[in-house]
Amino acid sequence: MPSPLTSLELSQLQITELVPHRQPMVLIDALVSHSPDSLITETRISKDSAYFDDQLQGVPNYVGIEYMAQSIAALAGIEAKLRGDTVRVGFLLGSRKLSFATRTYRLGQSYNTRVTRLYQEDSGLAVFDCEIYHGETRVAAAQVNVFQPQDTQAFVQEAQAEQQAPSSQ
Image (cartoon, rainbow, N blue to C red; front, side, top):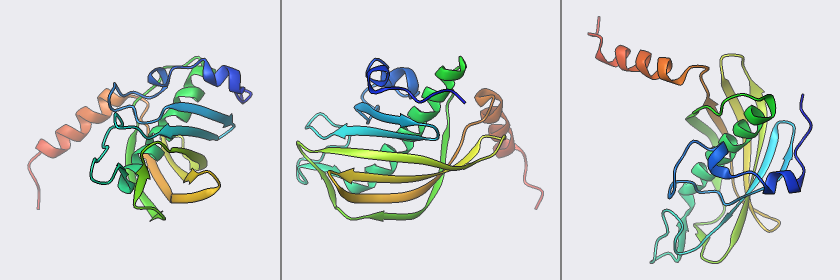
């Protein structure tokens, strides 16, 4: 297993190289800490943040699931780069034990998202323990199920073919 990246090494990585999204849909701002099977990211809330709501003066709490998903994607991207592999697309399948202790990610504040792999199959199915913190206070938590196929194009084509096939009910 490759060694964890140092803070300096993390600061030199571009999040867009790790997360298969384009701006403005990249929601995490910085990579904070990496260890085997775990990553901490930072999200800073500004008026330019995706999903910023003027009335709330922040981002609604439900966007936290996407902060978690993108942090998982960033961990997968780091691991792919460490192996010399290609960064691949993954899919958020669902979550369990999702809880929010805040209504809003507030303007001008920073939030750290910690993701830790609990389980992963060779097929690409994985479960992560995820938490979002504002300082020392946990403001969101979930177990997130994801899937990262070896061949994304084949997976999507197979799913489309299944949807178009006549039902045999």
